Length: 319
Image (cartoon, rainbow, N blue to C red):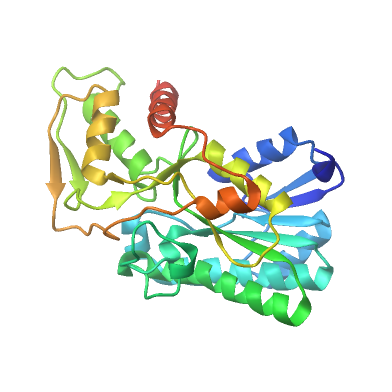
């Protein structure tokens, strides 16, 4: 608490899904001042906007969450945008932060930066073993370059920045847009729409739901509230440039995930698998022991509890 009472913190993307949870966590810790930037007010792809943001916020610490994100479809459709926008936001922000004398930058990266065939569970030292999975390589590599920048800036300038590699997040308030959402909110929305008429009344016989891929690929998911706790704790206690995995340390197949969500929502229709669509990376599961060892963090929300909360929140929001 005493650490945060003396700090002014800039949270880029602080109005977004993860950002809103991070802001609440900082406020709970008694942070002296939290400045939230939005893309509407500061387009961080533009250098002048980055400079203006740092003048306006004058932060001690920056937690960089702003990103262009989406599922497999969105990444395949707009790889150039995913690469350029994410790279420019991060690179320019860190460089201007260094010039302004910011104490520390927290870069929130992604599990998409890992090689396509990383041994499971993913260990931080395996990050450079190969090329990422093709469908989201542009995004993953853009985020990965911030680790290179962090090491270079530490070596040349003594600048302090840390890098956290997050798995897919989920929870109340997630992005449920059918074109840009990740797998959990996408499935929840698909099942809901298949179960309901346009006026909101439930159908007696639910429509079939089509899911991309074979269902055999595995993913790891982390409840968003746990992610926010990890980020704030790392910002306070971790100072090394080497990346740290942030996850729940388990994996579930997309097929089992779809069936689990269908069960929670009492879906009685058929699930079909469109095998003409890509699975993405074959397996994803992190070794999270470094986070526990370095700053004492372990995910506290079970997947079942978090998933039930997310489904309940979405159903209530649609009502």
